[in-house]
Image (cartoon, rainbow, N blue to C red):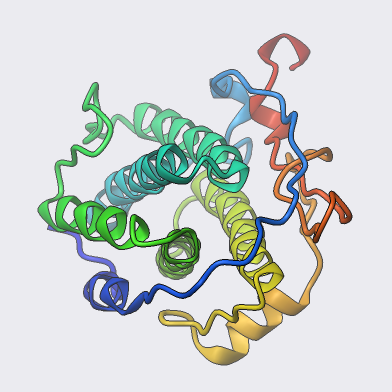
Length: 254
């Protein structure tokens, strides 16, 4: 069974999230449009190649890891009714769909299928989902910290997959997902900051984490502009961040 380098560390760190008193919620821009599933010919447009057994395992795992992120954010969004979770869950659905396209393209069995939210083929991901949701139910700040932890680990695993030198089309998709995850991580950390709360990295090294947080929202290929996870404080002041994946939003436009 494929186990990313940081999975066990993630499971340990998930128990470190602590509850603190909450100030008033910051205003967050809303109105993000929903997107259709990505068109197969619009995902991973670079050249195909051949996958090693390890790369196939990695592709299957990343498909389930994106599902875990979506499912955790959906659960926490229902608990706290905070738009950050709703917006990022929608982006994770698109990430899942992109991984699904790549599985089909390379003839790799899909571990997700029609599994319900919160149900996973990988037993460690199954346990992790339970841990993260339980932790995030403690308070809104616990939930935001759980989200940041998900994005840290997703990034670490994506960097690991890229280090395995996958074919160009799959590498292109992993890079696009990594851009999205860096934006998601920035969003969680900045919303926490609006409560006067800091987030310390638990998976990424401090230098890499600091560089991500200090940099602006990335708008690489496929990253749409528009309202999304806000940086706003108080009564709606601030700047929203769109998470639309341009290549996957409108098949008719391709």
